[in-house]
Image 1 (cartoon, rainbow, N blue to C red):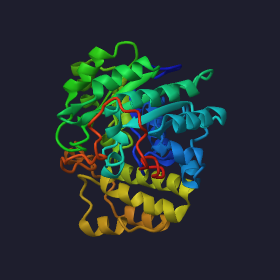
Image 2 (tube, rainbow, N blue to C red; image 1 turned 180 degrees about the vertical axis):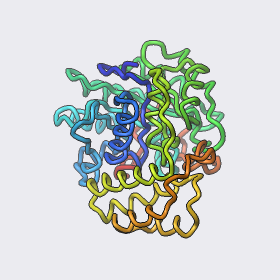
Image 3 (tube, rainbow, N blue to C red; image 1 turned 90 degrees about the vertical axis):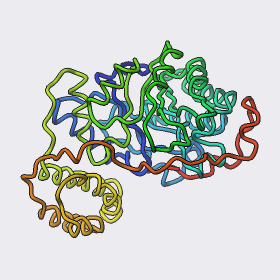
Image 4 (tube, rainbow, N blue to C red; image 1 turned 30 degrees about the vertical axis):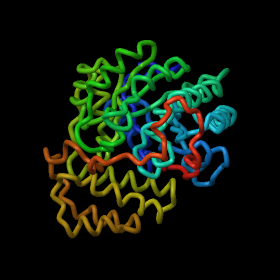
Length: 377
């Protein structure tokens, strides 16, 4: 699959996830893929940053835009609501060589985002959406940086926006589009509607269409592509606690034998590697605190015991982590209970929107205050 000038041997993209897909997690995924199948074949996207915070050089944002020395292409996702700020941010990325690829997030369903007209709410304003995509593409003129766009089916079942969004992004010069096949009202609940990916693929013919939603193993990815005709897949919650999933996907797409799933001892070693990478990025104290949320995902389905799980969820230092992991039985094989859905799911809910948001789809007014959140929002 090609995205602009980049050819991916495996049509697999790591979805940006706030607080997860930092340089430590991306490095771990890439190194596991390389060690298990001999290559790095997909695209690994940095966690989302806000365009405004980037332009203003917010220190936390600048730290988030960190890539490994051997990471290529370097992929960065922007949250944005304003064509002017979008242009400034993407020009900055190009001028300062901060990344090789820019993805734009119009899929976030979080109420604090949609309430101000950002994220999954914004594609409803189709003219404003087009102006933002056009600004990003214009800012990359004369460079090799492709711009891609990710969005949801729409706000809710009465307000679908994905077909318009796909056509607009294609016409404004986006190099690819990705659809999370849920509405904002669904959040992460229920089943992804893969049929909508197929409908988008029928409408968008000149650039790749990627599908996202309910891919938890390699067979899910193959099934989605066969069922929808999409050109690639985006992996989000399915890789939480399973950074080796990309090796399995790479093997499935390139015809290599599937690597065996890890034993509990091998998972413990992966946790140690993750901890060291986080400590290198954040320092040991913050790195260990960041690791805590991953522990439950890593041990999902394994027999570990409630006492040990609680202790690991409070770990403060690498030596303590190493000792606690040493109490796990390394011979335990990967259990069937460790497969399938993971991460947040929650319940569907009414989408919070600005007053009068649904009145005029062609209103180009930039939503007030929608870009004040710092990165990761």
